[in-house]
Length: 426
Image (cartoon, rainbow, N blue to C red):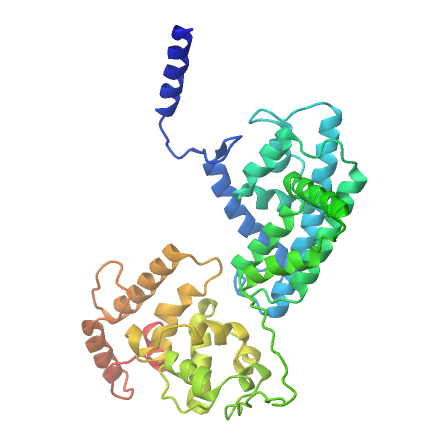
């Protein structure tokens, strides 16, 4: 007995000493997740979201460069993508439930890392069905995958009929969709998080928990409020805070203060901006003297900035003549001032600093690399050397800009305006 105990302890010690090379994600009970595959599937998720943009009619199907989708959309765009994802997850959910019951009928227990359930989620059954493809991508690119595997191994749904499972799932889904419809999803991370929570409704653990809660509530004579549960969850994702204001008849109603629209505003979005706050921040971000108006100088700076941040500096006249979008306002209001970043014009800031940040699928590495490359392009056009990775205009560059403006017979100064930009890259 003592020898057997020593042997067991030795095996445990040896197992604990196995190297962790990052190939597998070992957290959580159950099946190991291949880290490289999970990372690849996460990239595939965002690539597939770009395809969804075309399927949802938000971008041309043939576009090789798409601005805004899925990372930067307006309110209507996020609603469209949200519903497109719900539709696909619904299809995947039903396929998943059908699969679990078919495997149960074959008396499989899904115990190995190459099990049928893993094959299903990995995409074997999703090659021809776009609906279940998003379902699989969301699982493999999130920590929810282990829950799917583990739940399938212990099969908590055993004994429940397909009809009851689908009934519970449908009630949860309808309540969740109602809650999301009344809230605003404003970013790609929120979009994916909402999808993940919506998909979680279809997991065996969630279904089993709902079934048990409904049974207990029936015994206690109370009702399970799916709508309230959904609202609470969606509020935590979208950052919405419910506020209740009590009405005092003795005091009366206090009307909300009216904000006078900024002079020169040409759209509902611009007219809704506070001239003393948002408009001033937009002007500060674009190196324009703050006068709280959408005057000629501010409008010119907006359009030049649009040119600098568009692909290959190409932008149609309709966009240039339109008022600012929600995305443009949100970006400029929430960013640092032009001067604090070391720039003197909207051209400098837009080309060097903002263009890489507003690329589709931009990340920290790509933004830093893009800013350094764009600054290097200017330096080379001026004949100035800069340090590798530099992303701010140096004193040597300012001096070279001054000389270049003189040689081009432009207004004196050490700044890059649109005329000089064209001269540098003609």
